[in-house]
Every structure is written in C-alpha cells, then in structure tokens.
Length: 185
Image (cartoon, rainbow, N blue to C red; front, side, top):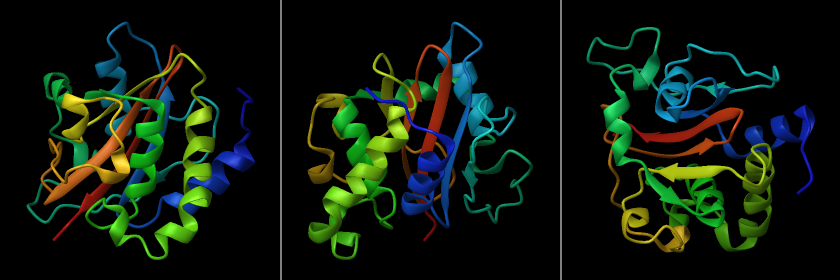
C-alpha cells in the first residue's frame, strides 16, 4: 500500500470534512488503544506528523462545551460501543459522514460522486497502513463488520449529547485517528 503525504491528506480531509465534523490523529502510546482514542477525541494530543486536522464539531448548548468539545464526557468503557468494521466499511462510513443523517441518499449527486468520495476516504485511511483496526459506532457493524455501510440501518451508539453522531476510529501500532460527524437537530 502506498503511503500518503501531508498534501494528499489535507486535500482529502477538506473534500470530506467540513462544518459539524471532526477529524484528528494522535500518537499511539499505550497498550490500551481506548486511552489514546480519548486523548485524540478530547484534543489532548497533537498530530504526530504535524498534519492538519478538522476539529469543527458543533458546541453543545447545555453549558458543558468546555475545551474538550463534543467528546468531553466519553470514558474508556464507553468505547465498548465501538464495533469492529472492515476497511471498506470504514471508507464507506467516512463518505456518509458528510450527510446530515449519515445516509448516501442525503449526499447530493451521490451516484455520480461515489468513486471520487470513496477515493478521498481511501486516501485518508491509507495513512494507518495495512495492519490497522477500524471501529465504528454504526450498529450495523455489531452484527456484521463486513456489511455494506452505504446501505446500513440508521442506528448508532452515540458518544455525544448530539441528536446523532457517527464515526470511525482507526487504530494502528503508532497512531489513532478519529473521524466523526454530528447531527445537531
């Protein structure tokens, strides 16, 4: 698998992640990947390569916004609701995050853009190498980690106080990536 560089990473992030979305990477420093995941979710670590991130997740209006953003109340045990998902499924979920309800029918011109959008997602996930593990809170993966995530049910184990949130956690031997979308109303 070819490696990517900061330019292709940034271009792909800009193409897929915008307002009300979150994409950040941090170093893998502990045996328990959940602890490193929380550091990235709560922005307590910087990208080890110095590459760009998108931390534009919406603030909460319940008075608990704080410096940690939408994941401030997530605990390690909450990540038990993150189900293994295949690389193909992770790519598909990254594409659907740009739709308000995380479904392909909510992406304008999806049929014409599917290959392009999937290419951006593939580029983003290449960063983590071949031996990466992917997790998602999309409940479809609980039953089948190889399911077609473009055609999944709209059920999620939410990690935030938003109406709905969905995402992918990428865990390699050296890095953890968090890619998340939020529905706020």
